[in-house]
Amino acid sequence: MKFFLDTANLEELKAGARWGIIDGVTTNPSLIAKEGVPLEDQIRRICDIIDGDVSAEVIATEADEMVAQGRELAKIHKNVVVKVPLTRDGITACSRLSRDGIRVNVTLCFSAGQALLAAKAGAYFVSPFAGRLDDIGGDGIGLIRDIVQIYKNYGFNTQVLAASLRHTAHVIEAAKAGAHIGTLPYKVIDGMFNHPLTDKGLDQFMKDYAKVFEVSSAAR
Ligand code: E4P
Image (cartoon, rainbow, N blue to C red):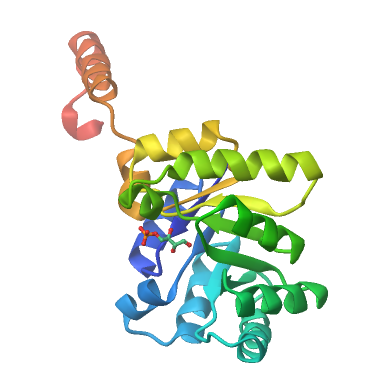
């Protein structure tokens, strides 16, 4: 399973990059707006930090405009994946961009039927939003499971990018469901490190060693 960071914040990306386990980045217009830097500039900066796929979403709702913007976004860096919403226009744009060899992430996917449309349009990624579906009483992880199964049945190459993951259990369940990628907010991936038995065990190891070899805490 690949891990993407779901953020446009450069400090979070730098911190994540240090761990050496981040395979890419997803952004959306809300995340870009939070940073107060125009889309193209922020995407360029992100590509300088993370060596992996970086999703950049079009700020348009009409197919021709999405295609034009998508072509410009794809020129920013070889790692840019153009993100379009799962609408009629978005699917039209996805078909056209994909035919031109531009990789597309179809976002705001909330049903298996929509995921089929994205695969038919040649999407590189489809992004089912598990958390937002759970928020309205749906079954986000069940959706991911269904999409993975359907894509397998027909040999679609579109990768399932589990999005809107809100906590560790979501990540584990998305992995069990076979998602190719999970995109995680920084605080979710950071939280995955924590376990009280790890802290307790490490503390004991250090104390036991120090008792015999008198390693000072400053030297550790
Ligand atoms: C994915 O590409 C989206 O940016 C993201 O996962 C949305 O998550 P949210 O529902 O927590 O905003």
